[in-house]
Amino acid sequence: MTTAAEIDSTHQRLKPAEVRTMIRNGALSMPTTGFSAGFMQGNLAILPEAYASDFLRYCVRNPKSCPVIGVGEPGDPSLPDLGDIDIRTDIARYRVFRDGEFEREVDDLNGVWRDDLVTFVLGCSFSFESALLRAGIDLPHIAAGRNVPMYVTNIETRAAGPFAGPLVVSMRPFSAADTIQAVILSERYPLAHGAPVHIGDPASIGIADLGKPDFGDAPILADGQVPAFWACGVTPQMAIRHARPDLAITHKPGFMLVTDMLSEALPSATARPTAGNTAGR
Amino acid sequence: MTTAAEIDSTHQRLKPAEVRTMIRNGALSMPTTGFSAGFMQGNLAILPEAYASDFLRYCVRNPKSCPVIGVGEPGDPSLPDLGDIDIRTDIARYRVFRDGEFEREVDDLNGVWRDDLVTFVLGCSFSFESALLRAGIDLPHIAAGRNVPMYVTNIETRAAGPFAGPLVVSMRPFSAADTIQAVILSERYPLAHGAPVHIGDPASIGIADLGKPDFGDAPILADGQVPAFWACGVTPQMAIRHARPDLAITHKPGFMLVTDMLSEALPSATARPTAGNTAGR
Image (cartoon, rainbow over all chains, first blue to last red):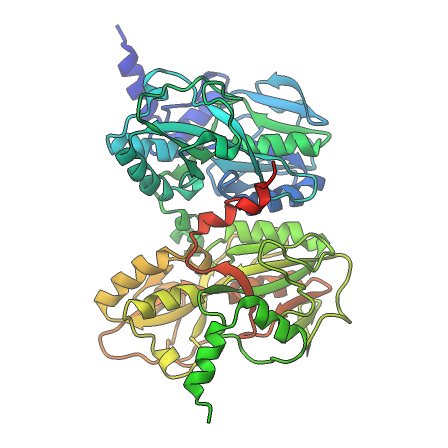
């Protein structure tokens, strides 16, 4: 009999290319949490080229909520910087938006893709959460199998063209000592939202009731714990809704792009030309 | 009698807005090294909107050589994220390029500005060099009043649209112990090119003769020192020449944009909405 722990272990050991091939062939359709341990997973945003410049400027102006780890060429579904990827098929579940409104979910983009689409991949919080767990810091929402609570704040992001809106944050509670550690450890992962944007009083960033998140599940908060708030990948999704492009595509939350990028590689290494690029020159 | 040291000290204490006002009024026209100590200075690149999306994608793909600290709106010469700036007048000396070729230098952009131009400001090496000096690490080119030596490498940057070309590096030599410190200290300033891209053997990145840099002045290298190579802000200038836009504008080397951004503020703080943005909400 195969136990859940054995399945988990198998998932962790699968190479990113193996996970993507299974997804591409329709053999895997589930959230990617726990797959390909040690490799970055990414949030997806696909937009028409007419919106691409404004959206990229929005991301550059708001790097804590929108850490860009990959950008495709207009009309090109490949992402060579992140692996051997066809973005039309290599995520298990997509969400399609028309004029800023949710239209439907699809398993691939073969009937949706257009020659003017530009793909953006943004880092997600998995790498910094792994670092906290390795340091012995408890993340109660993971232990409880819940989604992290997310809140719309009264902090405006920096707008770019039609992209604008509030900063959305995720919340994780810690003891004071662990809060200090969490600040230091998460700052090491700027492509995974980096250090918190706020700690302590929820009201001062416009959160009226910590018990009622705008997205995700209700928090598990013990006495004396300090809530710590991180910039969240839902922020760009709200900016996209605000911009109302005729077509926008995202992943279904939890169904991420599994990339070949190592989580522990320094962020600067994403800019380091590889030996392979220079051979023979 | 006013000594050079007193003049230097005055320069250091000028606020960025004071420096920019003097430049705007034509009262100051010299390299900005040493002005407004503690504030970030930036490299300038201005391009037509038709090239802006490709260039920003180029920067995002090559963040070590092209760390974006500000982007203007198309046709808008202000840069509110970096201070009360009119980019047409607030740099002392500009260089104008037509179809990728140098045309002339000008003192302001009033006769050059167009409604389709987009301004990019990229971080420069000043902040990490200051950090090395404060840690007691000698930078011989500064002591000698020379420019840092710069070299074209055999490493290709990641292209985006028409923007492509080799990585250009600057070189600073250290003892082995100081090289280790320099790696650690410079990594803290990702908006100032971050950690080196290479240390040691120049030939392995395509530099045939360390004594003959492609830009800047010849190096001052002592026996037993290790050359350390950083991604350099000349890289995007070569990519712009490669793209051959009908119009491109840069600063004259050394005549930088003095911004209100504090050098020691964490890079992530550039994404942190300020209290001023949220007042009254």
